[in-house]
Length: 225
Image 1 (tube, one colour):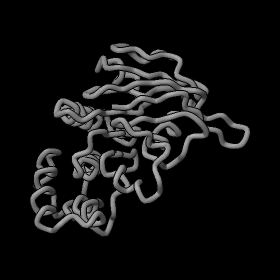
Image 2 (image 1 turned 90 degrees about the vertical axis):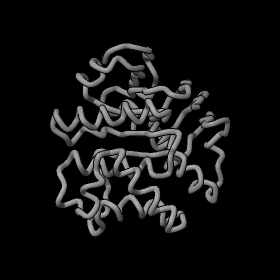
Image 3 (image 1 turned 45 degrees about the vertical axis):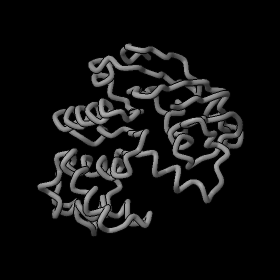
Image 4 (image 1 turned 180 degrees about the horizontal axis):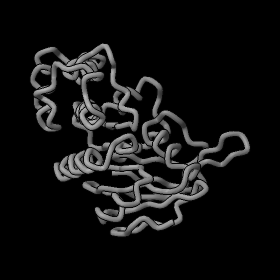
């Protein structure tokens, strides 16, 4: 699914990503961990083409996304779902409209939107709140809507950047359970987190970064600093 080869990213004199080599297979659930400044956020930006590498390759589904042209980026991003810590929902739109908007900007026909959005909202347990606005939702509910929006294009890859960072423990575990269920449906999940308890408990693959390098890659390991 993803093959990172000799990847580096430099900002001036700062080497944010330093010659990384990582392979992630279809169906995997991968934790990306490490201290602040380790390079996790930069790596995620490279995965979603918000940044371009200084050198190296990022092969996603047999294509080097580092070489994508600007006009090709929207099509690629439809295949990658991204979930953020701060939700990034449109406050003036209700739950249904927030998810539908991700399809509308891609000129998806209205009848397809009307078919797809309710199914995704039902999957994340938010169909009954479809008419509510973000301000009327709890943090956990807003994150569920954010996940629904990320999934509405049926992406093969879902990247979650600290998705439980603003949530209490109960909501955090509910979001993790949802991501696990999404993974079991065949979507690759890459989850960047500082939450040691979550990583230790789930026993999934853990990639540890420090100073822009991958220093540990454990198939069923806990959070090792």
